[in-house]
Length: 380
Ligand SMILES: Cc1cc2nc3c(=O)[nH]c(=O)nc-3n(C[C@H](O)[C@H](O)[C@H](O)COP(=O)(O)OP(=O)(O)OC[C@H]3O[C@@H](n4cnc5c(N)ncnc54)[C@H](O)[C@@H]3O)c2cc1C
Image 1 (tube, rainbow, N blue to C red):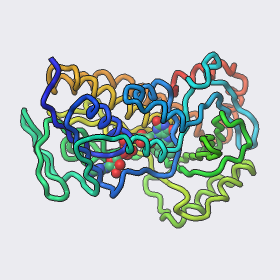
Image 2: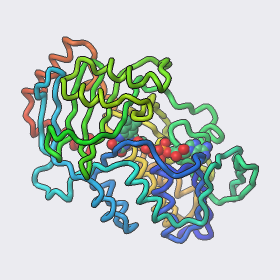
Image 3: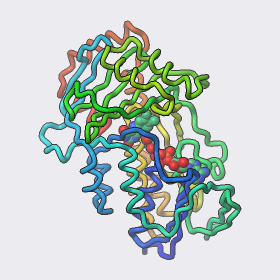
Image 4: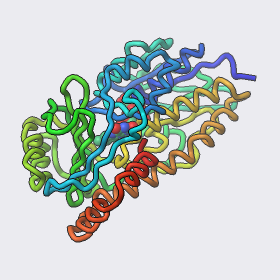
């Protein structure tokens, strides 16, 4: 018998929280969402989503709009810093282009989710101060001092999750050893408009993703110490220094960044937990399992968490059962992606020049079909 009379509080208006809010509201549940920021927006960046992930938005009637705003990707090229191809492969060439992964502006994606959101209440500038629960309900106090009672509280509040700290105690996010750069630019049209191109250096790499309407999304990763003493005004200089041995066309891209607001630098955190629920409080997305960024799968997992949790809330006989079923359904996939992501970081970001050359040689000789198969297994 499905659960009825449900009021759900979602803490966090990121991709996980917004997606869950859509699904639950569409199913008739009473949903409130709180977000600590003053508006529902995201950093200037792009995002890659595969078709399995995007299919979640079909049921919500948003798939067409999301994919129309996106750019289908059909191939991947990895190049060395001497600008030689290391590997180049097509993403399942038997598929028509509308079934390929799609790259889109994160803000555009966000805008679509926000524009169609229809929950009971969205409270901005609001955080969570306390969470107390018994078997039947969860009592929360917001940062505004307001008290409310819910049947379920979902922490969708990112890697540093305050919900996780309040309810699960010492489960801290750990620094993964990586930092991520992200910025948007105009495409330089130097590669196919359907190709992701990554340049692998020694301990760092940079990727270019063509988006729709002549835009491009650039991401970069590098290994670094836990504390990096670079305030935002020093970021453009750090970026230039880090990619100074990359090919001239990459340096041209990097040189376009002159103001701190043009680029975003994030320490990449990791959360390792096997159990994401306690009574009537449950975690989804990065708050449950932030992972190294090497496969770009964090949002995909967050969306699939939202879909799995919603499904079990709608069909399970009790909350206890719903959250346990959600956890069981997602844990294997999450742990697999976390492990693959770690492994691919070890390969893509080798910092020893000798081993980096060996890696490049092996990949150059490996049949591209095999590389495509492995990449699609891990990422798509
Ligand atoms: C460089 C880089 C590239 C990436 N590329 C990709 C990609 O191509 N594909 C992909 O799938 N993933 C990618 N990811 C990962 C992806 O961005 C994240 O995994 C995803 O955004 C997690 O979504 P989330 O909703 O769980 O958390 P978040 O996006 O962190 O959202 C959490 C929200 O909760 C709010 N919040 C926090 N605390 C509180 C509080 N106390 N009260 C109220 N609100 C609160 C925050 O303000 C925020 O809005 C990338 C990450 C990086 C850094």
